[in-house]
Image 1 (cartoon, rainbow, N blue to C red):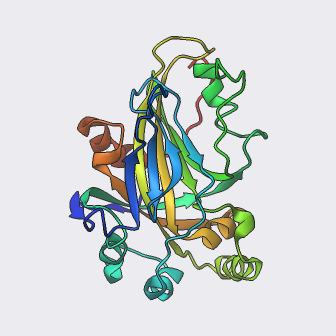
Image 2: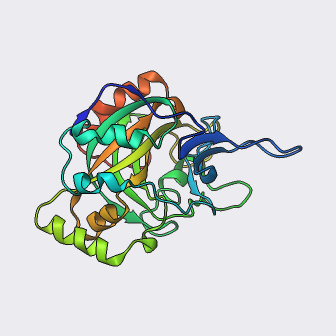
Image 3: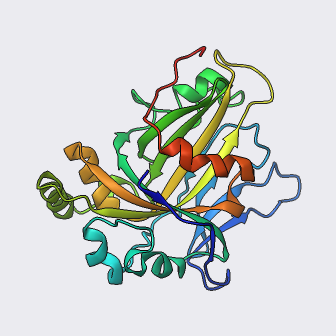
Length: 276
């Protein structure tokens, strides 16, 4: 954690925002409605279900095809942001977001690229130890996107925080030359800045089906700007700075939980051991 700002009102009317949170319309005879992250009025990600007892989720959908970077901010974000309010970055990205209360968090993250289903995947590892596999599919949850696992820490004896950075489009869509440029900058000591809208979802299974029953706190950062930077950071093993705008009204967490977040994020990383 570098700095945290005070919660503030940001955003534009829903009809003008490029990014929105929404709930899928209920079809006659259909199942539960999905909680969605929308980009340009298209469903981009399915998020953790509202009940709070279902597994943590960020599932990329077929219509997730757009990044939300701002050309006017590119030069400012090539370097290190030292304060959330430096250079008008929050105000600029606020024009993409729906009206609401947001908590700015300025973080240094060390990113590890995770491919779903392979070694080190949260969904087929830690999540299965708590919820077990999906009872219908007989498989773990599948996010349909590579993602970056950046941090984790014990909240208390029965809860653990997991932090992820999720690209709007997969790293295979990135321009190789730009990734290599950022790798070179990072190896010279530059720490560039990425920007994300974030949610904190606190999830606990209603029934103990796994090997390790506890509460999962999911801090998920959806990248607005920084797709090439995150891949470069993972490639070079270097940190990247992240300005997170935590959407307080769209998170599945209470005020007491979000108030604890800055203090938790300021501590050193600790991994969870099954059964502890």
